[in-house]
Image 1 (cartoon, rainbow over the protein chains, first blue to last red):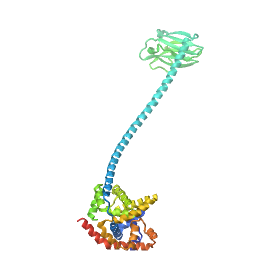
Image 2: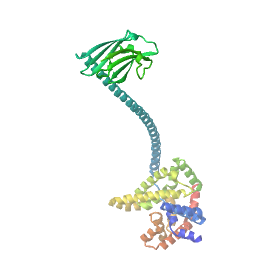
Image 3: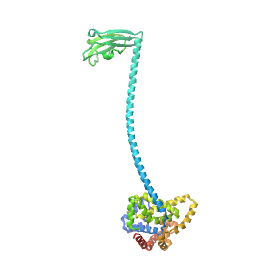
Image 4: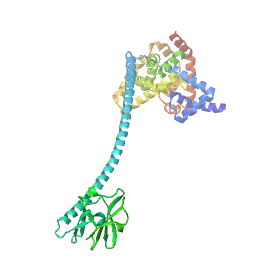
Length: 252
Length: 187
C-alpha cells in the first residue's frame, strides 16, 4: 500500500491536478487517491498552500482603474444576463403561444380538410344528381316535342274511376313517360304503385305520390309491346304487383 | 488568506453576489496579476488576462467545489489557463511588434512589483535559482514534469526532487512570514 502511494506521488499527477491539466480519467484517479489516502490528501493540501505562497511572492500591484474596469465588466455581464433571462422567458412564452397557435391551426386545418372532403362529396353527388335530372329533362323534352311521340290517355278501371294519366311513347327514341295527373284518394294504409312489364319481366317503378307527382313525368322502361300497370298496394309498396288490385294498364 | 474570509467570499460567490468579485479583486488581484504576468510576460496582456479571468470566475462561480480545491487553487487554474490561451493567440499572430513589446514591458513589470511584498521578493531571492526555474516551469509555463525535463535539459528525477525540495524550502522561508502577514492583514 505504501509503495502504491509512493508510486502515485512520484508521478506528477497530483501536480498536474493542482494546475488543472489532468485528463478526465486522471482527474477521477487523483480524486480517488485524495479521498482514500490521508497522505495524498495532506500532500495535495500542502501543494495548494505552496502554490498560493509561491504565487503571492510574484504578486504585481494592480494598476489604478483596473479594479473598476473588471467590476464594471462583471456588473454589465450580470445585467445582460438578467436581460438574457428576461428574453429567455419572453422567448419561452412566445414559443408556447406559437405552439398553442400551431396546435389550434392544425386542428382547424384538420377539421377544414374533413369538411372539404364532405363538401366535395356533396358537390359530386349533386353533380351526379343534376346530370341524371338533366338527362331526364332532356329525354322528356325529346319525347314531348318529337312528332313521332304517341300520346296515350290512361283511365282508371272500376276500382279507380277518377284516375287519369297520360303516357308519352316514342318508338324511334325508345323512350316512354307517364304523367299521372289525378289519383282517387286512398285509405291511409294504401298507396298506388307503378309497374312495367317489359319483355315478360315485371319491373317495379315505385310508389306514385299524388301531390308531388301530378306535374311530373315518370320514365317508363321501353320495350316492344310493353305494359304499364298501376296497382293499389299496402303502404310502403310491394315487391310484386297484386294482380287483383290493378286499377289501370297502359299498353305502349 | 484567512479561512474565514475565504469562506465568506465563497459563500457570496455561490450566491452570485457581485460583492464577491470586489473582495476577490482586493485579496487576490495582485497575486493573480502576478500569475498572469509570469505566463504572458507582458503587463498589458497580463491585465487583459486578469480582466478576462475575472469574467470567467464570475461566469463559472457555480462550478467551484470547495471540497475539491482551495479557492486560490481554483482561481489560479482559471488565470493560468486564460493566460496560456492568451499567449497562444498572441503567438499565432506572430506579430513582431508584440514580441518587442513583450520584452519592453517585462522590465516595467518587474519594477511594478507590489511594494508591500518587497520583503518577500527579497526573501524570494534566497530560494536558489535552480528551484525557482523548476517551479516557474511547472506552475506558470504550463509544462509537465517531462516537458520541463526536456526544455530545461534536466533529468526527470532531478525535476521531481527539485520541485519537492524547492517547495519545502519555500515553506521554510516564507511559511511563517506569510502566516504573520495574513494575520496582520485581518487584524
